[in-house]
Length: 126
Image 1 (cartoon, one colour):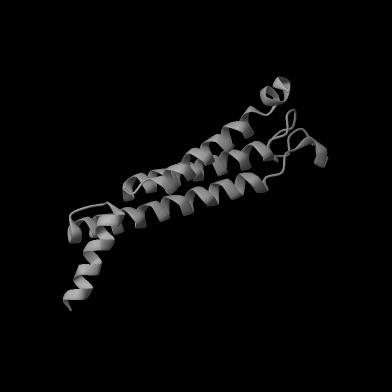
Image 2 (cartoon, rainbow, N blue to C red):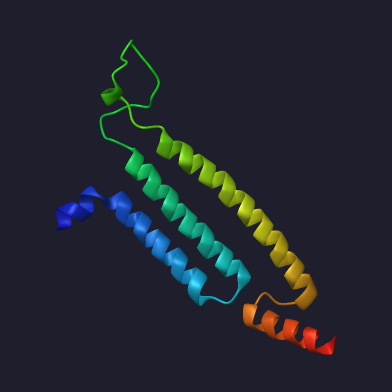
């Protein structure tokens, strides 16, 4: 059983990262902490995709020395998915940070419960 953990340590690390990020996203009320949790979850997902795409003994799909056999190269699709996911993750992080700044300027807090209460009071005052 220990040998299985040692053999698949990348996948175990990815699952642990995803779990830490998900619990941070679930249990914290601060928007910045939630954003950090979301980024940790993304990192776990990217690590899992990258580790699944790697096959020991194979090389990147760049033809060298005339070797054209498919079995000599790894699949480039997981690497492409990881790169695309990183770009999307950075974009979402930027948008969430800008929205967090706007919420802080309006309500002077980043606590979601407090923001909800203050927004309810604003609606009642209208």
